[in-house]
Image (cartoon, rainbow, N blue to C red):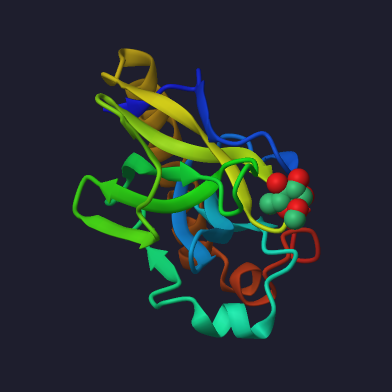
Length: 205
Ligand code: MMA
């Protein structure tokens, strides 16, 4: 199975306070770091882009003092064993923290193909849950101010591997094999080339 490039955006769940943010869709998620107390104060997500870890911005937590950070219960960060482990469900609760105020995200919980993490925060208010069947969560968006006001998701559907995918993969393997062969031939026939590592200087005319 491979991830489709056509992403779906779902949600957001939560309130209308704060300002909107959007991490966009990626090839996967490596870790999620949170601060929370009676609600989710902030979230930052580390993504994967073509095998490299890409840190995401921290959303919310504008008012999070050191005290709040210290009060946040551990573990503040969850680390997925990318690429074998991938995110399949995000759920949580939202409710106002001040009477008559706009709702904020009170708790978040995550499920991967391997295990469950959380809930983090306080599981109070309106519950929401987005379990993805036949897909993977590859990005987050939402709203935030002092806290995390709302959260939405990017989902990449899984699709069966096509002949095109296989040929592309084979193409890359074949390309690497040819370069390895050229490399080893150079080692055998032209040790100077290998030492210098510069074909132009040692080029025989
Ligand atoms: C700020 C402001 C609001 C937002 C809250 C919670 C304290 O107010 O940005 O619009 O709803 O933070 O994040």
